[in-house]
Every structure is written in C-alpha cells, then in structure tokens.
Amino acid sequence: EVRIGRDVLEAECSGVDGVVRSGMNWSNKLRELLKEKLSDQVFHRMSVSIVG
Image 1 (cartoon, helix red, strand yellow):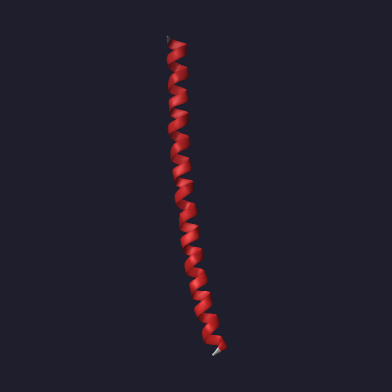
Image 2: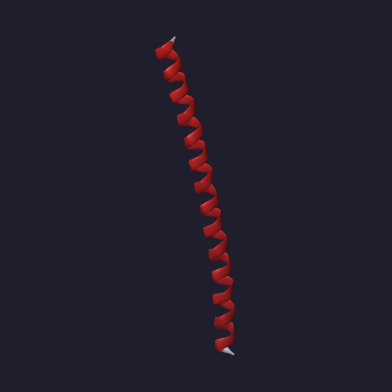
C-alpha cells in the first residue's frame, strides 16, 4: 500500500515537474525572442541615426 502511494506521488510530481520545466522553457524562448526583437530595433535605430 505504501509503495503504491509512493509510485503515485512520484508520478504526479514528475508530471508537475515536466509542466514546470516546459513552462520555464517556454518563457525562456519568449525572453530570447524579445531580446532579439529589442536588439534588432536598437541596432536599426542606431544605424539609422548614424546614417541620418
């Protein structure tokens, strides 16, 4: 009985862990995309101001 409970707990915990991890991956990807967009805009503005 105890073993079954532990297996269920471990399964639930690993499921939660997977969700948390994928959520973190998702936010990391978002952050990377935002960083790229922001740096592109900054670079574009800088090059425009240098040329202009």
